[in-house]
Length: 175
Image (cartoon, rainbow, N blue to C red; front, top):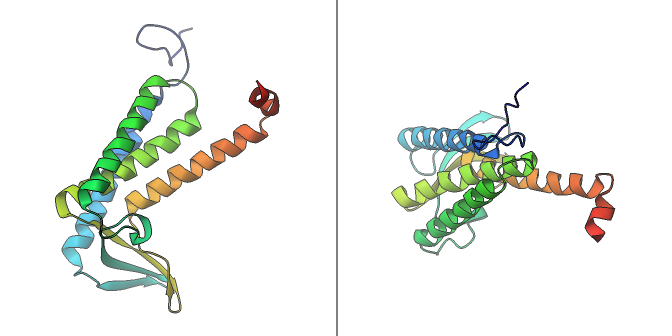
């Protein structure tokens, strides 16, 4: 019986993490489509109530997460996104088999980083449009790319926790 996870060279090593890159591509496409619809249908600062405590808005973020460093030049964030993306691609190529949860985390971060980098390169800012609020308090608006980055970070934390609590992890960490 042949192993469907065999590499090109014929060595059976399991699932090829490179195959997960379609997830990053999907994140980029969905991110750009949603930002396009928001940018073409809402004026800056417009808000559409969807349900209680949730609006669609159009905001422009020139900074990093939560508008930190909003006076920095967009090129800084583009270079950072490209650098992170290159690092992820190198990791995926070097660690092609196994570590599926880590690979999933990285492809979500990759898709989100590139989605926001496209905005910065084409617009000079990132379009944010998801807004949750309670009364006068509002969580920072975000977008699909931000959700993917957050999901990737959450998967990284989960992977670290699972490694910590996996039987024999304490012995492996001492070695």
